[in-house]
Length: 242
Image (tube, rainbow, N blue to C red; front, side):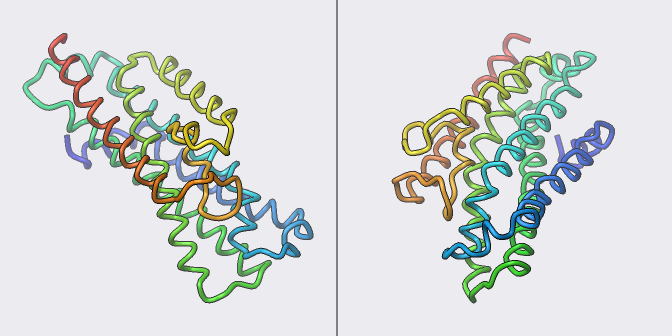
């Protein structure tokens, strides 16, 4: 399955408008939060990016995970409706290509949302704070770090959606995982490895896990590969049972 074909399918689902509007909503949160309560932020003796990430990222991460959950359910709902997925598994073609194309589009949509949010943080930093010469490098590092931590959850929600013909079941499972992540202790490295909990961690601000960021990145990479392999194995099992 090509990316072009998957993109055409999604044009009729509201997937792209949902990510666009959701991205604007998430990006507007730091601006509104700082505009309403500027005195609580601008006088703190910390770098601007630290203050803004500490004050806003938990809500932004929650919204981004919600976008991933809804997006994955929309993607596979189009395949399971009308038993299209079952018919496709009986054809001589690799369903793994379908999963890969959908996942790439989901991650690309996430990158678009993250860019909007980073632009919002940059606007807040320049409008309400004084920034130094290293601000843009710190912002790029933060963007890359958060993108890497979102990858395991991105793959996992796609795996869940691909396993559940009923969209409401996959939505329910992913939402439960999301709320479990919000209740896990933020100072434990083991609990922080839960895929839905990883995106709440930051390079700057709080909460911080008492472990080197490189260890978190390695764990995120390992989980991403693990979930990708799991989908490949499950895909072969589904094809044999089709």
